[in-house]
Image 1 (cartoon, rainbow, N blue to C red):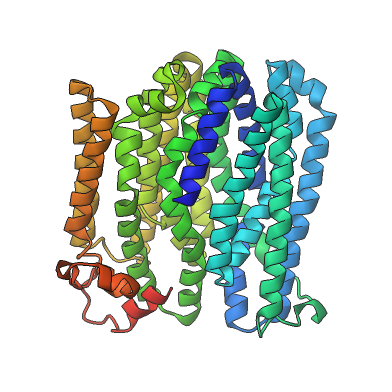
Image 2: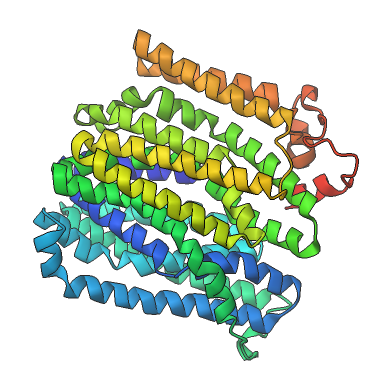
Length: 503
């Protein structure tokens, strides 16, 4: 909630302070930089989430160090090359790709964020791998939002423009990376197994990491074709105002991913350790229970960003962004379904089904490319939003079909299916009510809160909240006693739920 509130505040300040054209220019550059950050590590950031927990479990300290060096070195080298390429080709970009001079200036400044964000992501994954949840919480959910808030406050205090904000974001990210590196070094030094890691000769598992990670770049390519390509096409055909209409609502829509992203950081290391122990059945139970918790905890965000999309967009960003309401609704539903499907792609990654992921991603990328090129020039930001959500849903359905057919997961338990169905029905019903009655914002938000509390009260018992979170037992009424197991299986071992609770 700390992160949500601060990031919300930061987004509203930026959109309201900058003109729509200025915000569109900043959003254009930031979108390109964040896409480049996903590609910069060449997949090694994804590989270390799987392999370092396994090496640590097997006490192979030399390979732990080697994996760290490969990921960090790759990110630094690729980052330097990327920034150099952008600066050296600025004239070509101005003549062929970027129509607005301000957008180009922002891009050349903010492209330095790409290697910095990539390094930040690697350090956060390592904090998750070594189980330092408190450090991860402070770094990701407190420090990062505060640094961005400081950058925006500096913008407003000095009367700067979009280029100034881009530079301030770069400085804030440099500070964040330095702090994360210091935290990680202390963690490695305090770990009994890794205390002497600096003196141990590294065994570089370079081929293994790249063989696993590079194919997974297909996921980032699809992400780029689904979002950043939309931004590039919008800037070219509809100007920076079209970019602003699409990008302004994305941080709000992406709140549907917050619970998913938080669980994801710990899911891969936990599932990888289970895989190393041969506990495949535990992975299935972990998967379905995680998907249910993600769906329930994301429900209030879905109701606000999907069912009440238009009044919320106007409330946050002003009447200028009223047209962004339907865009917010379309993107929010796609992102929610992406989260509610659960960690299907990550589960395939744990089971080393990398080629399957790559094939699905490339197919989804091709679909996104074709649809965006056809739809965005004609229908603008709303067309881009619909294409983005549609491709996301198709991609997740494909992941789910594969992971189920491979037998790596059991079928969805009836209790979990009821949770997902109830949430979708409620969200669509509230959208219809809002459309027909045009409820005031305050009334709509009150209805969303009441519906959320009703759903939580109905399903928390099913999710065995007392068993998973015994620390809050004394705060709960007796009706939330432990329910039936989520996955009925006569062969399931009794300790499974205890291990999940610890995880």
